Structures are given as structure tokens and as C-alpha cells.
Image (cartoon, rainbow, N blue to C red; front, side, top):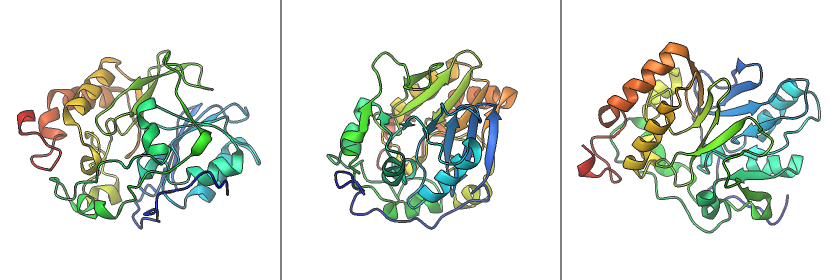
Length: 285
């Protein structure tokens, strides 16, 4: 293990899962979403070609599963050109150190995520008091200490391009995390949304377990800036995505996606913003 890299002191396996766990969905020929317990990783690139990237890095202890999913799709000993992070929360960087060690590849994230990925700063504490269900109440057990990727982590180019994803641009979509990004391809309006919006109500254990399909704002217990989160959703809706892979829940496409996003924008305060919680500003309602 590269001595320079380490997880936070509170890093551990989180025993929570959904019926979608272990399931992969080919959303487009070069866009594949795979669920690790309760979170999605995304593979961008066509099978048979060795030019592909991994977006996000799953839950703690999931490196073996991620490697086998990739080898199944792209062939044995295949490896991505890079890992692109939508943000650095524990369920999106859970296996990253093992993966970087295994493949010796760079990781890219937004400049504002750097303190959380270089051991300098912890994210704000998750809010177990936020309006929501069981997952919110469990959130204090989630790893929150910063991980340190040393010199393996690089800043996304300031011109909006995404390394090794020539047709995609990154879009800054803060709210859920300061440097949260979503990835968008204009040619077919494909969106990798991260947690800017999701397609399951992540706070409710029953819905997480059953992956009940409904559009939702970002996971509430880790979202600290609701005004920014709302602006990010508006920004993404304006792109009129035709297909969206989100950090949690199943992919959404076509009319359902259009209508759901429209509804989320119009009713953001009701659907997304919790009625109470320590990061909820009374002025938002």
C-alpha cells in the first residue's frame, strides 16, 4: 500500500445494501452503471476498447467487486485511464486507495474537494436530526474524516474538459459538497449527475432497500448548502438531459427524466429541502 495514501481514522465497512446491489445496467453502449450496496459507480467507454474511465469509487471494502466488474466488461487486466470523482464523500471514494494502488492511475476532482481528499479537512458532520428516515439517523456512523490521496489526486482542468472523456464537460454543481461536479455530453445529452439529484429517497431505509424509483434532491443528511443545491438542479435541468445516471437509485431516461426534473425544479422546496435540520435555513421555505 502506498504509504502516502490513507483513509480517515473512522474508515470502515458500512453494513447497508439494496436489492440493486451487484446489478449493472448498460444505459448507453459506452455508459454503464453498477450498484455497490447503495451507491453507483459509472464506467464510461465502449467494451473492447481499452480507453475508458471510472467515475466514483464505491463503498468501503468494495475494490474487489469494482475490479471484477471492470474486468468482466473490458477484459482481464484491463484498467481505466483515470478515476473521476463527482465528490469525495465516503460512499464515492470507498475503494479508491486500493484501486489507485492496483492500477497506478490518476484521480481527478474539483479544486474545492481537494482539502477533503488530501487529508486537510473533514466534511461537515452528517445531520442525524434532519427530516427523513432511518438512513439519516444512521449517518453519524458513516466515515467522515478526510482521506489522503497524496500526489495521486489532480485538479480537474479549469476549462471544463474531463481527462480521458473527450466528449464530456464537467459542470460545477455544489450544494451537496463544495466541489461537487456533474458530467455532461452535449451530443446525446447524457448526464452523470453524481448526487446533485438522485432517483431514490436516500434518507429512507425502506426506499433505499427497495430502490423505489422517484426523483429526489441530494441526500439530506450530508447536504449543507440547500440554496446552492437548488441552483445546481436548475442548472442541470436547463441542459435537458436525455439520460441520467445518478449516485443513488436507478438511471432515468426520456420523458420520465424530463418530467421528473421539471417537477424537482418547480417543487424543490417541498421535495428536496427538509422541513428541519441543522443545515436548513428558515429563509429557504
